[in-house]
Length: 528
Image (cartoon, rainbow, N blue to C red; front, side, top):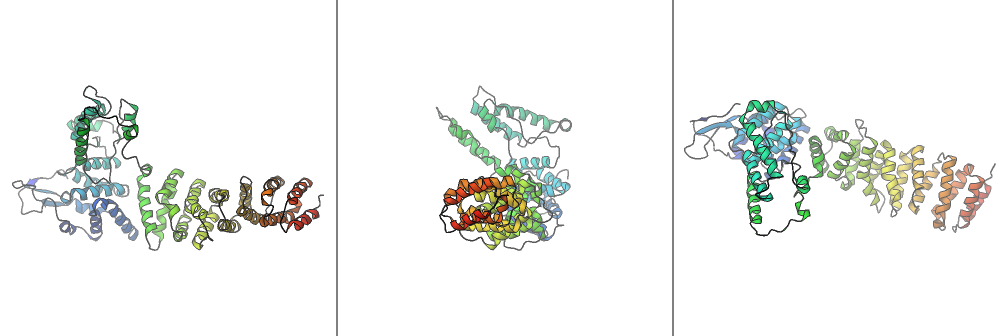
């Protein structure tokens, strides 16, 4: 499409069509997308949700027909009486907000679309006589994302000139550093780029963001990037007018107050999600929609979590935070765990530990009654598949909490007995040597000892040392006395003369009804 011409033609549609008029041009699936794009400032994300639902229903679907219809020629009516009719693509007839939502939607899904149709649509929009500076910037950004060599800056020459004027007013008429220097240099580059297409093709492609030279450290930090905001609801022109009016009012004062340091920081800090690649951001939206829905999960639902295989540990932690895993209802946990434990997933230790901590830790710590079936199912499934991360990310932190009670102890005992082999049970026992014991911890240790652990001489010596050092706090504890009785009966072959002397002093202060039984069991141990 090289360009569009002015012609004298039969009666034409208005420059801005009624949505009901152009919906008839689209097929069924495309109509749903257009209707979503019409949903005000949230249109782009509504369209993304519709697109994902359509993909789940038909994995082979594409947006080719949708884009082709957008680029079809339509006869457009003049803006004012006396002007000739024009022929242009249907997308020209969209309202400014609808075109903005369309570009935002394309920005969210461009990586999954064939390149030629997207470039065709961008070319149509770039020739729109009513395009806004925001549209121009987004079109150029998308062309860069698609690796089209577009060296023109994201802003227009007019915008660059206005920003240059504002920066000169900020730094004073006799100084032209910082922002003024940046835009002075970039404006001249823009003029050279538009004056010679041959020279433009020979230059190396520049990055999407400009390195800014600043007079001060604060200004340099504020000027790191020029960022295109996808979801803003006002055009750049309106923002420029508002900023100009506000700045003019402030600069008109004879003695303006000095701006505090905290007010010189960027108005809108970069969101943590900005560090995620685009395809992970899209997957986050899909998973969030799935978690909030009440529908049954199918194979395609489970495939959404494959994005976890593409994440490094930091990205997994951020993803868990964005999806609010700690706040998920417990009835969702079995389905979620079933999905992430599919054979196609094989998480690293750090990824598994992050998932376990996000999904289970807060829920278990907050228990005030026995764990629900859903929580037990989720815990046992994760513990069976990833026992080592489970020990370090869940069992250890829970045991270290001083406020845990019977609900936590019962659940941990269940996990230890049903999911951990002897190697990891020894690991849990060693963890207890580094913490202050409580009644709940005693029940875990007792359960571990009942499973007849294969203790080495060194490990048994460390354990008896813990019994002696922490025993005085439990002189009236029946749990401690029962645990001691298990040690003296099931592990009597490990007890040396030195151990016997230490344990005897420990039993002397015991005040429970089991004291005589403990002393008798100790006497029966003979050292060879």
